[in-house]
Every structure is written in structure tokens, then in C-alpha cells.
Length: 236
Image (cartoon, rainbow, N blue to C red; front, side, top):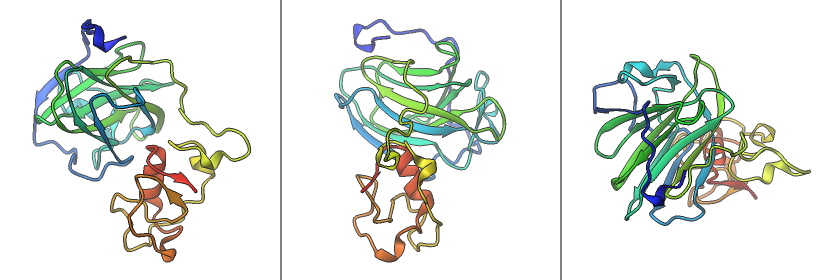
């Protein structure tokens, strides 16, 4: 599906609803980080591995919303600066993924089964600002590996899941989530743990802290794992 042709898919499973007093904590630090993109970004599409799912039933958000998400925090935040193009957010999985997005205008959007079991939401005139994104799984408490895509050009539902599977003799050095299970993440005993930045000096990339201390090595597990899976850091 090419977005710049002006031919936009009518998504029958797309539901929009104004902001409600719901349980989702959209202001929390997202599990897999924040992605800042401006119109014309490269590479397009942006792709990142996520682990979808949670225990909150998305059908409580609005009629037409399905799947189970983590209501304590978004999976990913998109900080977007638009121009003259449409924008699509989509997910690909080997299961039945769904999407929930809280837009900069305070609207909740949901999608399911746009193509096969993969969901997509298309914004013909995207707003500037923060898009909070959840990828849902079909069963409560289940974890569904998925790839989250953001594009101004083509929605490609034919990407591998996971996107960056371990390869070769050194899988730990694959950015974007490959080899995550092989990395010794440690614990969250750093005083800077869970602040949205990776403070472990074994890693580099835009998701690491500006100040790295030796004593924080192996002690910022949650932040570093989330940034690694979002493709924002890599092992040195």
C-alpha cells in the first residue's frame, strides 16, 4: 500500500473516540522508548521489535477496540513533525495483533485485521506532537512478538518477526532487538534506573544517558532492554 499516491485504504476496523478518563497511563515512560521522526525521515519505514500484550482489555476504550495491552505505560511513543504526507502506524506479527493509539489531539484510535490479522492506522493529515502507541495481543497476559512500523510511503506487512533475529557468531551486536535474550541485563539497582535512558556503559546510541558511570554497569536493566528492543542502543 503506497501512501503518497493519494489512494488511502478505508479501515473498517478503525475506531476513533475523544479522550476519556481511562486506565491507560499514556503519560508514563514508554516501554520501548520514544522515537523522534520528522516528515521525510529515512529509512522509511521505521521498524522496531516490540513485545505486545498485557492484561488490560482494550475493548474498554471504545467499541471496536480489541486485544489486551499494558495499561501502565505505552509500548512506544512517536514524537512526529509532519509536512505534506500521510502517515501510517502498523504492526506485524505471527499472531493476531491489534493497535491502540492516543493522538496529539487527545483522540483514541484502534485498529485490527487491516490486512489479514495485521492492523494499521493511516493519518491523512497527521498532527505534530506525541503519539502514544500500544500493540495488543489476543489473550490476557500473553506476550506476542511483533514489529511496529511507521511510514509515509509503503505499508509492508511482509517483514520478518522478530525483525532482528540473532545471526552469526555475535548476535548481541544487532541493533533493534536482535539477541536480546542473550544479553545479561542485570538488575535495576542503579539510582538512575527507570528514568527512560540507558545508564549502562556497555551500550551506545541515542538512547543512552549523557553521563555514564562505572557503577551503573549491569544495573539499569529495564531502561537498557527497552531502548535496545526499540533500536535506540547497541552493544559496543
